[in-house]
Length: 463
Image (tube, rainbow, N blue to C red; front, side):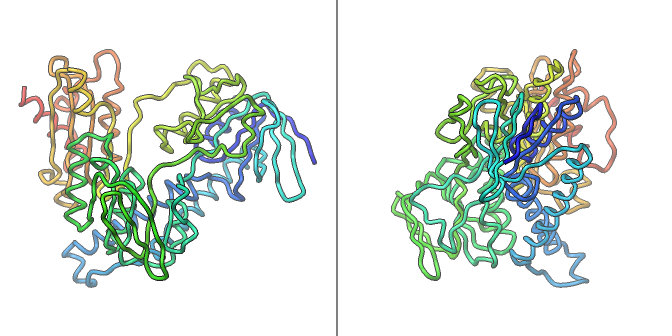
């Protein structure tokens, strides 16, 4: 057993842990990181954001090939198998791991691979092998252990046809029909992916609409588009039981419906990775979902311990986790320029994409804020007509009197990229956040950014 002392110990090497470590190191702190995996990158790189988005990109590329008449001179429409697109995703994962390993090496950070457990608020034990333990003493500790799929006790995940969003990456075939239970971000993204692979998809939603927290019109657009491509969406359906047989699984719903398929994906909820972390030894307690409560400095109720990323719950985005980690280490080094991130953009990588920032119509109506709407439909923009990605809409919500931007919502190809233009204007101070920006500045033509000018003019015409 060896003992070490550091200014900061970070548990987890995903986006939150990486940024916390990098920022603390740049401020002159000695830093060590702990990760239960043999490779850096966390769940984001190995199980979540990177593989699912890489899968989505490969499937979308094939879909575009199949629907473009120009390509018929090369080959007839085709489909890829899940193992083929998954192999593409694994290549991206390898590149991400290699890049992040260089980051740590360049900054001379020590990485301990093993299971972390608090001994006391300033001491973390690392079980590095069956017989070896390291003891790390730290002035500050950052918990960035991420999250994992929630697994209910009444679902047999050992059955070869039953998966969660982590184990789905081990699927070695393309199912003919897949049931996805849960219509949040993960459920909708994988519904798009498997639909693009030619699978019959049953998307079972315990709620009344897809992505219930999104703008209703954008949610409806995704639902309409998915149904148009053959996805069977079942709303307001509650899980009762799942039975696995040799060649199929059978889902029973509380409504009495029975659905059969040759693959089942549970995509309903996630839990923070705080099990066996010895939180009680650090004066901490996680909630029922394994998540930790923090203040505006990302500090837990134990003053020297911070928590960032998925382990603190919403918004559970890699982008937010990275900023949270940087802000937490900023608080550790007494850097007053830290930011508590609130108005965070959402990017949902369905096919097509969805992205939003700010308020939606339902929220503005409830708050009785006088707003107006400006829209630009992709089918009317030259760039979308050229690329063939003409499904979608850009929607701007703005104050009727001040023209202040209140919300940006986009559905369509490259939505997550397009959104950032509106986000940049929304964050302008001293009267700079106004719809007028889009009609008083010239946009390149043809571009998708031009949709902002079209939407702004549409909105002003409504006044």
